[in-house]
Image 1: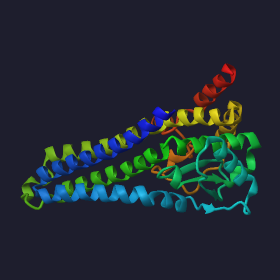
Image 2: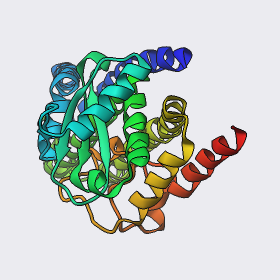
Image 3: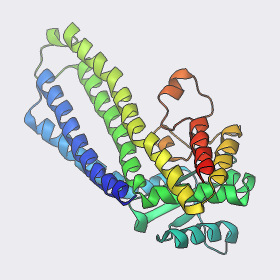
Image 4: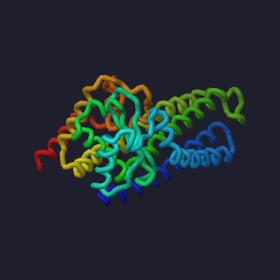
Length: 296
């Protein structure tokens, strides 16, 4: 477990550095194709660094605001507060800020920079519909994300998606309007059209692959870590089953924040949506949890 935490810290910085390099290369390509100077490359690189840092520090607050979450104290909801507090004492980690989102859909997420600056958010629907041991399993799962530093990695993943798509949009606009040093005859040439089309197609796919690589294994790890905390695999397994069967949909969620939730918040899913989902199949997670129960 400690090795996983160390790996997450290292991968966070590798992800951030690799991301800046990737954006710089894309900016260089745009500069070469459309005749922009190296100042364009520098500005894109500088912007990516600034935007990543701003998202890193401000992103969690934006996610909570987007979810319509309200912070609670012990007096507001002693039941939820005590569950979180007791699990934090058992795991030896700081108590995160606790939020409740007024959503009928059953879901939960954790966000923040690190265990000392973390928040956990539960929807009203998940509090009302889960039994005590089931809600405890969900909270243990989210606390495990915090303790394992998953929230840091997943927050950066959301940043990647937004900026990669933005850079793709810059390229397309340059493709349509032409570079400042290009003649009109050269604008919209077949080669440039092909390059722009390929970039437009690949950018969202690359963003999805990044989220897949980060999120799916982190969910399995958080499931296992949560069970180590509660010692009751069926609690989380039953919670996941109820969440998957709940038909209510989250009203305040986007593709950029979907990977933060304990279960995929989008109910209507075709084959391609499931293929590129940031979450493992609920059936696979339940199977793994029941396997832990049998091993006990």
